[in-house]
Figure (cartoon, rainbow over the protein chains, first blue to last red):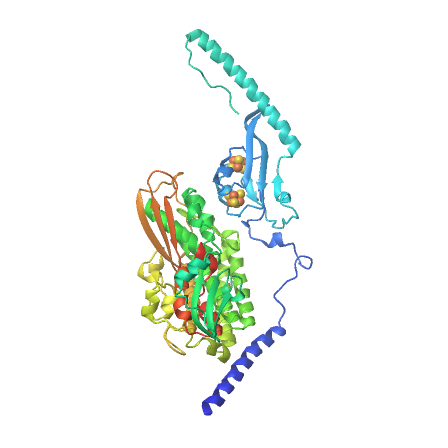
Length: 192
Length: 385
Ligand code: SF4
Ligand code: SF4
């Protein structure tokens, strides 16, 4: 009987203790905030420096080396580089990021060798923005084309022309050298 | 997933007599923490037989590993246990590093340990909160989740993401932290110790909560070892087995911390309450470890030079580390030629915990089934991988 009463007493005592704690929260300021319209400052500004938000590429900086695409485990990055008139090295033809697939793992960013030398906001050619709001109603909306399709088509054509020119030039030299050496070794010329 | 035929072969099916009914608990049940299914054969409210059905969350992570170079598999280890991602990263990194013979700079090791211990607290908060919710107390869960949110903020500074951090790299970590991170962590730890006091007043002393857990699902030390339990579940049964102590990795051998073991404070050793209280105690130990790390960490490089293409020597090796849900082991087989593993087998604590269910559920009430299962702190992705 005494144990029975003691149990009841203990139950009430501990339950009320818990209630007291819960009640004390009623008198405190709520820790929840209303997102997004009642925030004092925009959320991306409060995020730490290295926050992995949406993936971005700086098309000017990018050397189209393709290392990021190779480093990505799930083929999020679809890119192609090609020659351009009056530019040494490669230029981007297209660079698409499938945000819906990306798992924000940072491997591509670490692989990228192209960096801008600026002191503040220093970043590699492919980098994470702090912005994380990227929802879309369609799956295609999650594919971001950093080179617009028209421009990409133009660049592709240009690079193909250059490649064809070079191939022709290379063929010429091969012919010449063939003529000189009279060897019939086929040589592969031209590169894209 | 279990087909009808499997079921027949696995359970000694006696024709269900009039008083016995078969019910499915899950795959989508609020108390199963992910998609896990039990098939319970009930006599009234007592479980006569039970089958645990796993495989609903199978993502063939081990198979994916065979088709990816070693560094590219790192983000997938996050998904082995998403509640304690850095612990899984660390386990994998240690396994490969020990095989490839890679050096890790001192600061990187400290940072890894900070990540792992923060993740451990984070994971145990989920464990105790979800246990409370499963036995009917919603408020403590909200409190635990609130604290976890502070940890996620810290992890955000440390790694750049809140979950699935992909923080550890071979030979280091992916990024350094700003100096104010340590101040913030210090502040959080002070606050967290106070919070645990409040949490104990709110939940741990609550008579109703105690009654739901005490003497429910008792596992003796031998039994727990027999089910190959590890981690907090094994320690709750009175076996002081902690890999940070027994087989130290990183700098855990320099750390001063005690290994909490279950002693049947309220009921019998190895009951559900022991599993709960061991986790609470472990969070306090993690706080201690974090404070020591913070006093010892120094400036320095965070990444050593690693070869561009990692090829492990032919052979196999097993490396284990202490994750919040028990021993996390990576068994790596390499053919010595390619930069991808021949086979990776991941051993997780949750899977071992699942093996005990058919045995322990026998003779339990349905309500106790929920309490016992919640006290094991099983997360479904770790079971299936
Ligand atoms: S963050 Fe990871 S998943 Fe996303 S594009 Fe980069 S490498 Fe691929
Ligand atoms: S790794 Fe960097 S430079 Fe190379 S293609 Fe990717 S974004 Fe461009």
